[in-house]
Amino acid sequence: MSIQTNRNKTITLTKQEKDKFRTKLIKLKSVKKEINPILNKIINQDYFDAVKKLPKNFIDLAFIDPPYNLRKSYNGDIFKEMSSEKYTKWVREWIKLLIPLLKENASIYICGDWRTSSMLHTVCVEEGLHVLNRITFARDKGRGSTKFWKNNSEDIWFFTKSNKYYFNADAVKTKKKVIAPYRNEGKPKDWVEGENGNYRLTFPSNVWFDTEDSTDLWGDITIPFWSMSENTPHPTQKPEKLLAKIILASSKENDVVFDGFSGVGTTGVVAKKLNRNFVMIEKDEEYSMYGLKRLELADSNKKIQGYKDGYFWERNANLN
Ligand SMILES: C[S@@+](CC[C@H](N)C(=O)[O-])C[C@H]1O[C@@H](n2cnc3c(N)ncnc32)[C@H](O)[C@@H]1O
Image 1: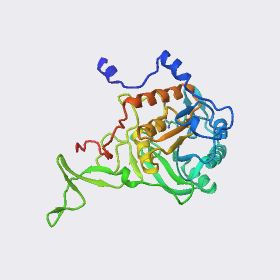
Image 2: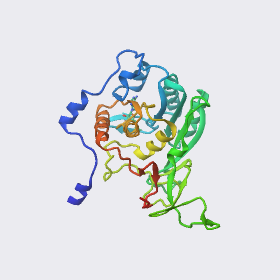
Image 3: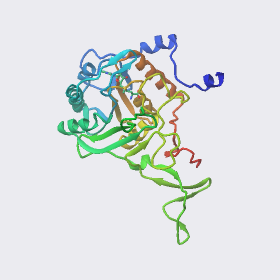
Image 4: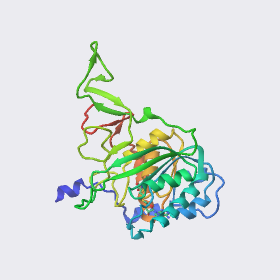
């Protein structure tokens, strides 16, 4: 029992920390003409109110992980399941408000589950965004069923505002162990002889895995749990590694990354670790304070689990 307790790395907030962080959260009262005063801040406010007070044309990359159309408690604030028409209207409303804030060459990633994914595609295309990919994030856990297949994947749609956009595939290559090293005239074919083993650098695909024992594909994005130092009490926290892939591929250093439903701040934390700027909006005060604590921790620790020396590493690759 005590061993488990010691290994629990979940981030907590003391009363003193809450008192300190509360004063650092901001609320927008008037329309801002410039982004600089609110760069690298968490706006603790309702999206629909805050976003109308932000300047136009400042976002290089937006990552949006909204409440899915399910009954879910966010720190006691219940997001209620709606009819699909009502949820579609709600989604369209925040997308319409987001678009003017995007730069012409911006990229937008939007998360959804299987029930809402096709609607996200339809609404975004109707609102004029360009579709680049549907990324499938296959999660390890899901609620089992005897009546139909267990649903354990989510979608992350990759859109751009125009056909001029930035994408750096070289920044998100995976270092994979070579199991069957093929040689052509004695020379390695498409792989490298490393001091600690042979490896291959592969291009990322649109299928991402959250799994304990992934040995192939582009796996290995673990949903935060109690023994990971990025874990918080948020019920739907996204993994830092997932954000790292998106931020590295679709933004440059010093760009502005935006998240309108930022929870415990994963987007901003990873943006900071990768030398990008961020603006985040989250309506729950406590989640916003967790975000600030994680940002403070990132001052002294820029590590992102699974990402090292410019590469994503397969679990158990041991190619250090
Ligand atoms: C799916 S979670 C995002 C989790 C986040 N990606 C992370 O890694 O922490 C959605 C968040 O949206 C927040 N939220 C819901 N409605 C909101 C609104 N109208 N304005 C701002 N935040 C809202 C919830 O409190 C919740 O934390």
